[in-house]
Image 1: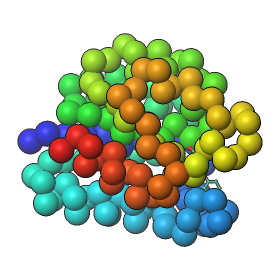
Image 2 (image 1 turned 60 degrees about the vertical axis):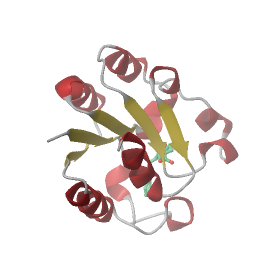
Image 3 (image 1 turned 45 degrees about the vertical axis):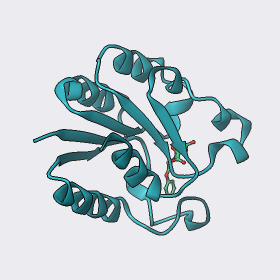
Length: 139
Ligand code: CA2
C-alpha cells in the first residue's frame, strides 16, 4: 500500500482557533480526517504530522524517503529555511508544497519560498482544500 506523508510546520496546530479570516475555521484534526477519507477511498495510507520545530520536519522528510509522496506546509519556514530545502533536496521522493492562504497577496516576506525550487509544485490560496488537491495530484 502506498504511503503519503503530510507534514505541517509551526503554528499550524492553531488552525481553526485564531485568524479564521486568513486560514479558515477548519482545524488540523479535521484536515487529517478528510484526508483519511480520501486515503480509504483510494487504498493508500497517510502519515499526518505537525511540529513547531524545524528539526522534526527535517527528520520526517528523511523518514519519508521511501514513501510515495510528501505534502508539506512548512509554515513560516517556507520563507527562510534552507535546512528544510536541503532536506527535500536530499531525498528522491516527490514533494508538493501547500499554503492555505494566498501568500502572494499578503506581506512581501511571504512572496518568497526557498522550498519551491526543490518541489514538484505548489498549491496556494485554496484554503485547507489545498491538502486534498495536493494528495489527489499524486493519485
Ligand atoms: O498559508 C499558509 O499555509 C502558511 O504556510 C501559513 C503560515 C505562514 O507563516 C505562511 O506564510 C503561510 C502560518 C501558519 C500559522 O497558522 C495559524 C493558524 C491559525 C492562527 C494563527 C496561525
